[in-house]
View 1 (cartoon, one colour):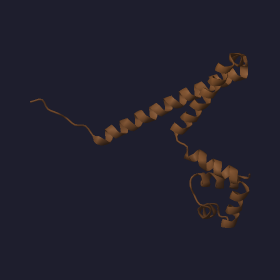
View 2 (cartoon, rainbow, N blue to C red):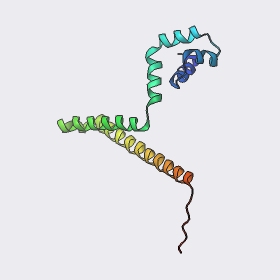
View 3 (spheres, one colour):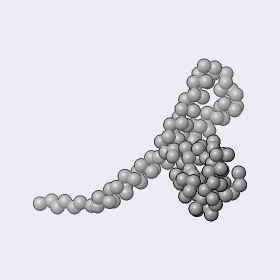
View 4 (cartoon, rainbow, N blue to C red):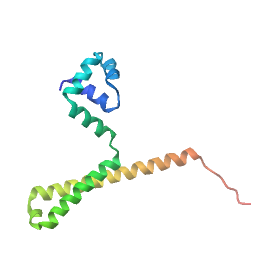
Length: 125
């Protein structure tokens, strides 16, 4: 895939239609339609990834983590395999980091919401 096709894929992932992509890149609509057709899987995957939320990512990572744990529980000797142990640790670290990031975003959103409402002063009488 060349640089223009990568740009087209990014625009497609952002929700642009082929005509909009063509106009942005200075190409014909037919060229964009052909690129999408020839690279259908990549274009669709880019769009799916762009639509994923942080909660979706956390869910997928958590599911992967649980699958590894189930595999180990069925055969504890697998935990001695450095690749499986490393994969488990890496997934656990990513889940923790993404969770912390999600919590920070929620706190920031809450703070912004509170700031929008303003401050109420109550006088004691």
